[in-house]
Length: 64
Length: 249
Length: 223
Image (cartoon, rainbow over all chains, first blue to last red; front, side):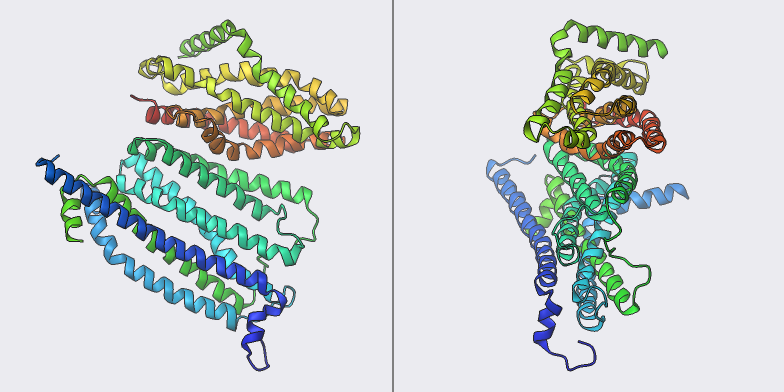
């Protein structure tokens, strides 16, 4: 990549180490995505659970 | 004086206050992590020169080394938070410790896999019992032990305290484990194994490495706060303020 | 305080000798596992000799691990642990007594039978002494550190796998140095460094592990 014209195909080739480099970066991306998505799903679940509890108590006509 | 500080700490560490403050902090952490991450990737993939020994494969270190640093850093955070939770009975600290464990385990896993992906072209094998990889593997087991203990005790307070104590015991042991693994490694391995971090690193390689490490820290800060907020909602679910808050969402 | 220590130690030993058949189990397990290796790998003397330190040490480790349950589990279930924790004596001392009893009943027999296994695995005669010495210094650490794990999981039903998950990573330094001492001794070299390390870890465990165990018991076992 140094000196000569920049080329995307050369960039993706990674000097023959494409498999290793890109699977590392891909895995890192996957890890980032999972760590963003899973707490958000968890948050939705917790909120839904609290809402259910509120409804149940309202229909029972009593508060804890 | 001391009383005032103590009062301030208690007010800040009240779950409700934490929930409000952290909600404001998360976007800042997330955005700066994203910006730094993009900048680090650009520097690491486009600007940093090719390594004269390892060719392009060395670019894996921009993922591997920050992940390895994070894996240890998060364990330290867990142990310190657990100690605070145990000594001063601050529930929030326990929640932060519990929220950190899965993130730390993920970083450890990432460090392990990228290490072995780096090792394949360098060592000719996906797995070599190298000191660093072996230590990471043991660290992953320590995380698993913490999470298993945390989830197998029914009572939340007991689970927090028990797994917190385990984290502290683990932190006392980590230097001993690390030292013995290093020592074991020098006995069994020839000098042919290349090291990740060389004594002198080209500045264009060092900058993306440090930028990525910072990005990883900020990313952790954002995610741990989101997770800790979930813990707050879950554990305080019978409190009035959580009820009111949930109705509004 | 010393009286309380001896009292509890004597009680545990007496109770254990009443169940004599159980007493031998870890020992039999130890011998059994080691003798599986020649069957699984090869009876070739050279190869066995090379594997011997690791095989014997790993088997000792597993044998101690399996026997850890008897450290607090029984006492927890029949309520005598509650009484111990209510007693006016410092819990650390009582923990130390229980661990000492556990070691006398499982660790020490392993140390004594080790030369026989050394014979099975073709460990050179001069390394057998080092094997015993390394186990003598190492097995108390296994009991001490194991006590922390048992006390953390004492209230967990079917905590066996959980206990191994928690404890085995902490055993690694002992395993490395213990096995290596025997390995080096088989080559006729000095093992001073390894023995000193094991001794240092033992000293550290005796002073810190009972504290952690006492704290853990207060957390998990109070009902």
